[in-house]
Amino acid sequence: MTLNELASYTAQQFAKNYGRAPRWIVAAPGRVNVIGEHTDYNDGFVLPTAIERYTVMAADLSADGKEVVYIRDTSGAEPAFIDCSVPVKPGPPKWSNYVRGVIAALLERGIKSGGLDVLLHSNLPIGGGLSSSAALETCTATLLETVTGKQIDPLEKALLCQQAEHEFAGVPCGIMDQFISILGRENHLLLLDCRSHQTEFVPMMDPSVTLLIINTNVKRRLDAGEYAKRRRQCEIAAKILGVPSLRDANAEQLEDAKSKISGVTFRRARHVIGEIERTLLAAEGIRALNWPTVGNLMYASHASLRDDYEVSCTELDAVVEAAEAIGVKGGVYGCRMTGGGFGGCAVALIKTDQAETIAKSIAAAYKTKTGLDATIFASRPAAGVTVIKGSRLIAQAGSHPPGGFNPRMIGRNSLAFAGDFFQRNRFRALATRGHHHAEHVFLNQITARAAKPRGQQTVRGRRRAAALYVAEDGHT
Ligand code: GLA
Image 1 (spheres, rainbow, N blue to C red):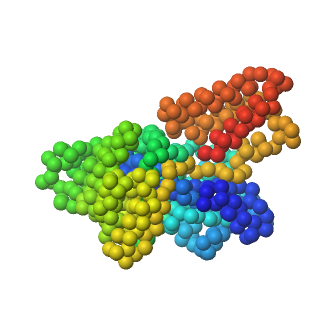
Image 2: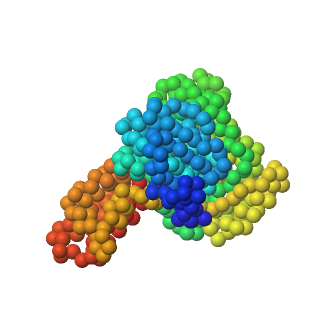
Image 3: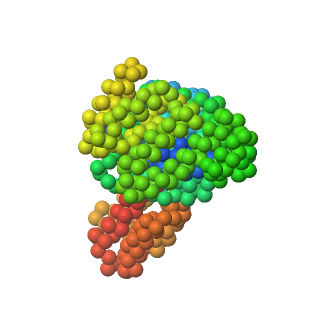
């Protein structure tokens, strides 16, 4: 199902449940991490991408005027009533805590939506290690931004979503999932420095390669206890090494300190130090279109997660072994577990034209080894959270009288607004050359139109300018 089909299905379901059309629709993607596992909370690097699987929210102001966010879910999960007239606290049902946490954090910042009727639909496997929870958080935050017209800096948005997960769901996750769900870009991976929060988009345009996502269908047992334990072990290792975090240590330093560190802690640190290096090498490999190198780094990452970090499981190992057995000749460059571990998904880098044969072969080997059915799909790198219907900018562009655009769209106010919009929403956090270029092109186009007196602008010109607003607004 394409994103548009998914959105219109969600709109239909909204109408069925609430008897009217939704005013807003927002879609937030899941993610797959190509490499850089358990490095985010060690101030290291990660290399994830958003995928073409989404959590979608369709919404309208509540019919009864009460300050309650009411959410129905197409999966049949228990609905959530979140009373926003009182301080929002964790509460039932459990899944609603990701939403509650975000609403509470936004309320603290004075962002108050009032009552909403919401319909939630997702084609992301829940608990499959593809960040369904981060998608729920970023979808909620973006919906509330859209409803209130108050936009937050993407970095702040990612951090508040992470805070929601820590405080309301009790999962001490790192920053990767929320970042990529917000910042994902089509045909690009995101190299994120989890210390400085600097980002670099690494293009993955080559149509001859694709990512295959293999769900073991073993529920991700991301035991919060085991995850927190790994975090603590990393902190202990950093302390012994005398560095602020494992990001600042190298393999030699670790080897020198071997006698002072317990065997388990040593192995945890060895994984993190090696994985940070592998992530940077993989980014280089992708830039150079050197797929075999990237693939080998993925296998090395898996072995390290299995043996040193001990977060894999027999099912994930079975998938990686099946992929490795197919090899480059059969179209597989590399494969590894992805996400927190203990179940969930593996990701493989494969030749696009062999995707079907590879999927069949992995599924068969996995079944033989585990008796289980894997769910397998391919995804191109996708865009981050997107307002599909009802964004303020779309509303402005659409509010023109028939036959002509609202001239204010092209005037000085809208120019300042566009600058402010970019400043706040995209370019501050994404200070890369590509982005600056895009910003200039955009602003130049708008400036060119604005420089002409209104009467001299062609309708086509105005339409094009307005269309640009709409197109850009699709990617908050
Ligand atoms: C989970 C967390 C992330 C990250 C990964 C492991 O997905 O939510 O922050 O730590 O595990 O890389």
